[in-house]
Structures are given as structure tokens and as C-alpha cells.
Image (cartoon, rainbow, N blue to C red; front, side, top):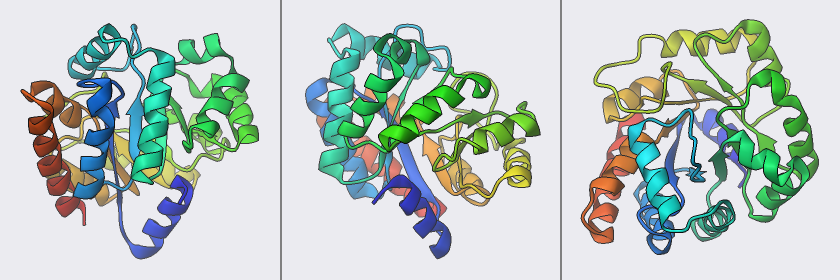
Amino acid sequence: MTLAAALRAARSEGRTLLLPYLMAGVPTREATVDLFMAMTEAGADGFEVGIPYADPLMDGPVIEAAGRLALSSGTTFGRGMELAAQVADRTGLPCVVMTYVNPILRRGYERFCAEVAAAGLDGMIAADLPVDEGEPLAMVAKEAGVSLIPLVAPTTSLERIGRAAAMDPPFIYAVAELGVTGERAGPSEGASRLVARIRQVTDLPVGMGVGISTPEQARDAAMVADAVIVGTAVVRRVMEAGSSREATRALTDLVASLRAAID
């Protein structure tokens, strides 16, 4: 099932999708896919697979450290894409790849989008690509049969939200908090207002991420969004685990608790 189909089905059933993020190559290339499998069995509906990048403008300290670990162990862009393909194949769930625009430019839009499609992925998120400059990549992606998923922030104007919607993505990525990725202690004050503004412009599904780390925050996000994206909390548990077995247990517990909270 594609991500768009999964979102349509979830909306008709009154469900919210849970889309965890984990970076390819963390803690090792050999362990990465097994951790995605563990999250599948714990209740994830699909995934964002991060590709490590040396200058991650949007990543907070936890995901940035994970990127350094993956790069130092040899997870290149190409090897990251290979792992993303394995995740899509072995889990059988919708997957998108999350990266930055410079590696995409270096590869070229046509080659990159063809690789995403060949890997069995639904699309891509380019974290630092402004909406105004995303339309060419979105067009190439559509020709390749995949999608560019645009990000909108609490500061994004209605006009720019409209331009994001015009890319016809499977969902609009609502950035719940300004700043880099990370965990926060309390509820988001602006998330529901952001979703309401998106709803003024489009009926496309909304996936909410950035700053969502606890079951309570996931539950709150699920009340207004079609999908909940959890990244830093997932990555931190892997980085703090003493072994792959501990990481598997920690992710199983986390994803199961998030699943229970949003259902």
C-alpha cells in the first residue's frame, strides 16, 4: 500500500498513522533494518528513513550525533539509499527518505527521483528546500512516480501553504515547533493553530512532526493531524542503548506506547 492510500484508509477509519523516523546506518548498517522491523511489529504504520548528511541544518544535537556516527562508519548517501530500500522491502510499509537538498542537487533531480522510485519508496523530504524552490523537484518526482513532501512551519504564509499543496503530496509536513528537531517537555502551543491554517487552504492529509517525543504529545498531535512523526525520541533511544538488543527493546516499548496513545 502506498503512503497516500494508507493515509486515505486511515482517515476513513478515523485512525492516525504513526510514522517513526530513524537514520540509516544507526547504530550500525547491519542493525538498522532489524530496528525498523522491531518498530513495525510494535505498531508503526510507515517510516521516514534519514540519510546522514554532514551539514544538517534542521537536525538537533541527537540526530546530528547519529548522522556523525553513521557517516563515520561508512554510511554514504548511496549506502543510505540501499538501507532505505531494504527497510521498504522487509517491512512492507510505506517509506519516505529524508535528506537535504545539496546531495540531491549533486546527484541530479532525475537520477535521485529514479533511485527513490527503484528503491520502492513513496517519496522524499528535503528538509532545507524552501517551498518556493521545491516545484521543479516535485515535478520530476511526479514523473518518476514518487512525491516530494513539503514542510510548512508556524510562520509559513497561507499563500506558501497553497504552493505546497499544489505539489499534490501525500501529506503536508507540519513542523510543530520552530527551530531544529528535538524533544520538549510540554505540549505544543502552536501545533493545532498551524493545522487549522493548513485546513484553510487544503484538504490534503497533515503529518505533524518535530518536538513530538512522548505518548501524551503524540496523542495531542493525533487529535488534529492525520499522521504523527516521531524522530528524536526514537534516535535517542538507539544512541543510548548499550547493544542492538537493548535498542530493539527500547524502540519496541516506545513505539508500542505511542501506538496506544494515538489509537
